[in-house]
Amino acid sequence: MSSIKVPITKTDKGGFQVTIDLNLYSEKAITATIYKYTDKFFVYQNIMPNNDKQVSVTFESKEDKLDESIVKQFCNDLIDQQLREITTEKYGHIRDLIVEEAFKPVCQ
Image 1 (cartoon, one colour):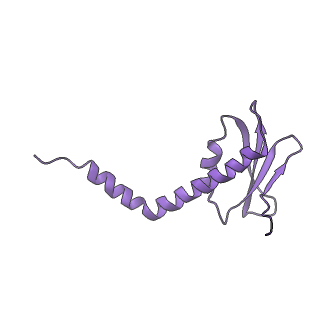
Image 2: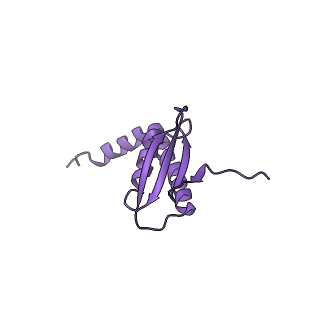
């Protein structure tokens, strides 16, 4: 069984950087996921030099302990957010129909 390399690297400032492929994840999903982490960490997003199909997201500690497991959790949350985006795109109209039906006036 081959090992899968997680695209996480340690930065020279003691933070972590994760490389994200824009062919797999939307910028909207990335931004929404980053937002979840901004209260505890400094988070920066940059387009990778010479590659407009990848972005890097860098985490630096504010006060909380920052270790690789937090960045791995970010990767899991990113998958979750992307699936939410896909589900909304495919089935959002069904949700809209349900909401419309739920708020229809009740006939007497």
